[in-house]
Length: 256
Ligand code: BGC
Image 1 (cartoon, rainbow, N blue to C red):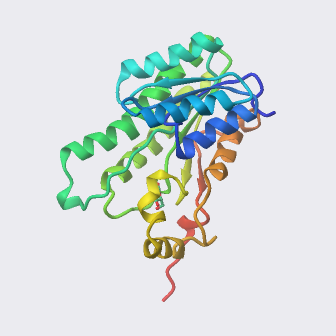
Image 2 (spheres, rainbow, N blue to C red; image 1 turned 45 degrees about the vertical axis):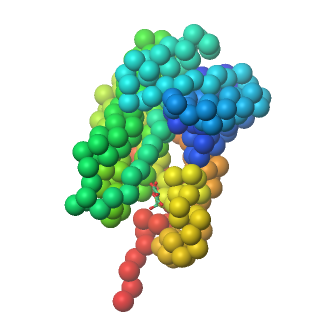
């Protein structure tokens, strides 16, 4: 058990990569706060039934990561339940496909709000608690291969993920004296609800898979295993780094 006795918080953990990360953390012995977004009964039920099935006690907590007071309340609830916070995974994320020339301010604000402000607020609230309690900590951002490579039609998403990369690199330095590490995981095409329209369309799938050297989409648990490593004591000397989990997508070359 690599996270025995640790206390972790995972945002956006009612489905997809976040759910897999929370589940693996619990299986490795951590107490996990499973965050889900407001106004979704389906997410609440998914979070609550996931927690009920964990081998270690956890909590499901509703919070909108775009609201500072929700994020602070989520950290406070975790500490109230389990006494401390050792690991925060800022995973909650959305994407909106829209050509740049047609994108609206509202779409921009939503994507930047959840992905970038949400990551900032989660990391800051968690880091404040970690510094106050002492003993270091782990912050992991769920970024994307699109923190580095363009994704036409997804400008706000790419801007948010590029922002997360610099957020992570900066706080890795500022938090290092406190023994807190900060790293990014950059997943490529993973079979989760965010990709549902591609997964449901054979032609889109063929196109997407043709860009992936390993020839398939990844599974959420293949991202979760890297999150476990970054959250564990074994990653004590890893900070300021991005870990790609993308089947080679970012290494793709064009030959002609
Ligand atoms: C996006 C997916 C996309 C994948 C690879 C992810 O960050 O959320 O929509 O398929 O990157 O391009």
